[in-house]
Each structure stands twice: as C-alpha cells, then as structure tokens.
Amino acid sequence: MNLTITLATATILSLILAVVSFWLPHMNPDTEKLSPYECGFDPLGSARLPFSIRFFLIAILFLLFDLEIALLLPLPWGDQLYMPIHTFFWAAAILMLLTLGLIYEWTQGGLEWAE
Image (cartoon, rainbow, N blue to C red):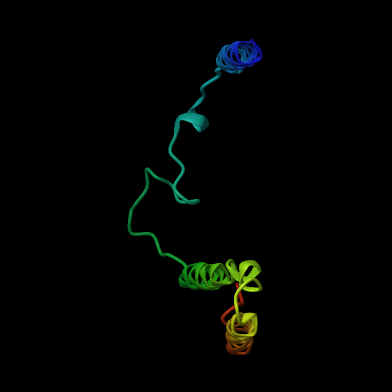
C-alpha cells in the first residue's frame, strides 16, 4: 500500500512538473535568439578572421591543470590502503609538479592575457 502511494505521488508530481515546465515559459523568438552564436565571432561574416593565440594557450593551460587535478580524486580512499604513505607521497609529487608548472608558466608570461 505504501509503495503504491509513493509511486502514484511520484508519477503525478512528475507529470505536473512536466506540464508546468512546458507551458510556463513564454516563447518570444527574435533575431538575436534565433541567430547562432560562435564564441563571439560573427557567424555570417568571413571565416578567415584572426584568432587570438593567447586565448588558445590559456585554454590549453586550463585543460592541462584541470585534468591533472583529476589524478588526485582517488586520494581520500588512499588512506584505507595497507601502506597509505605511498599514496600520499605520489599525491604530494603531483601537487609539487603542478605547483612547479604553474610557477614556470607564470614566470614565462604564459598567464598574461594582454601584452
């Protein structure tokens, strides 16, 4: 009996939310909303516009540092191993490598947006 009431309530609530979310927003299309947006470039203009290499380099650096942080995600489970000191040593090595890479990029001017 309790399961039936729970399923019925969940189904009715889901249907109500779906109907409300379908009918609630006002559809007012205009030319700005209907035109494609391509990272700040005019999509109807020339495809041979100059592209800022600084923007590209900073985006690559962000991806590099962001992906290396993912290597630290298993760290909270590392203290449950037989020898957790090895896990913490490798985590410290990764953090040191990230810090040295950040210092190197900073001193080389790789993080400067404008010259």
